[in-house]
Image (cartoon, rainbow, N blue to C red; front, side, top):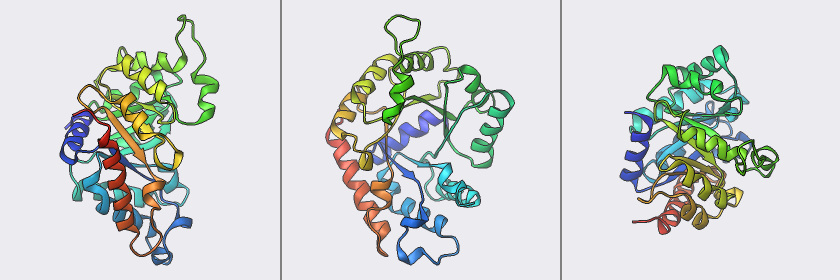
Length: 275
């Protein structure tokens, strides 16, 4: 199944636009895992099992695994999600940004090694930084940084380009919705901390999925985000929360605490969706 269809099916099945970001930080793990020989894998799979029926996607952040020399745990984790919770897409948050043969190797890493269903990519080297992901894996999702949630994103993304009145992030959105979207599997990252820009991007891209980080610990407003970014059918968003769910509890019942937090966020999101 192609990424966009898989995502839409998971959103319908679980009645959810919530994505759980898997950013494992061993320093924040509960005491019960501190002597575990494979703590990162154990922590993440427990979170996955506890929240799988509340989400539309999981998003492991590759840096949290690589920094701990835990790439093997990431490979096992993605395989586990596919085997135990089939139909829920895995988005590898890598934010790769290169061209040509190097970009192709990053695509091999994401799609062949880790078996991700989608990957985040930095498009600010132009279409050359996107094309290698599209040419070999037409069914996979490629999610482009557009209007990121960090304040410093405005340093560049708000700059006007030669097309009068168009800001750089708007140019990226327009290209992604048109000439770059060769396989129909592109999506965009637009931060929940900027609902006005979410609404702007939505107008430019139609029903294209928007991966929207920033709710939860980063303080993005759920109501404003959903109302700004949802499609006419009440979909189109992948609302990511990481720390607010992963570290909702620090006892032996950490997975149950994560589930409670995920369900609370899912219910809040759904409160503002069109039905």
